[in-house]
Amino acid sequence: MVNIGKLMKQAQEMQSRMAKIQEELAAKEVEGSSGGGMVKVRMNGQQELLNIEIDSEVFGEGDKEMLEDLVVAAVNDARRSALEVAKEEMSKVTGGLPMPGLF
Image (tube, rainbow, N blue to C red; front, top):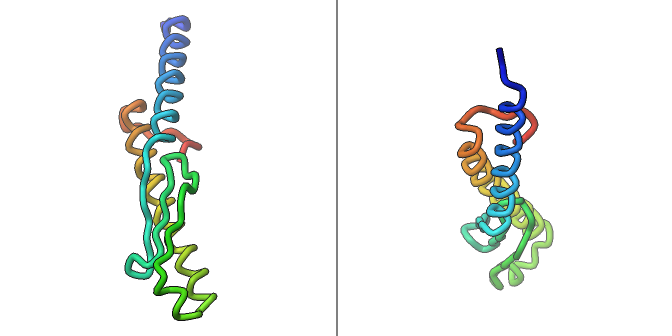
């Protein structure tokens, strides 16, 4: 027979560890880039955009649509990296078991 008190304690411990990981993810930074590094984006582990850096060469070309595409690509690249960091950190709590709805 399963001890409900023990299960509740384990659930609380996991919730506490997950909250700690969320805090740690906010402090981690990842970078995404596009256009051979002409556009760089920094994002934290919670997928919050921190910085966009655009090489001055991009402005010289005068191609607004290209710049917009490069920014989108760099943000998506950084977002993928942030998701990967978050998955790695959460797997430490879940022991590698998939947790529906987390990612």
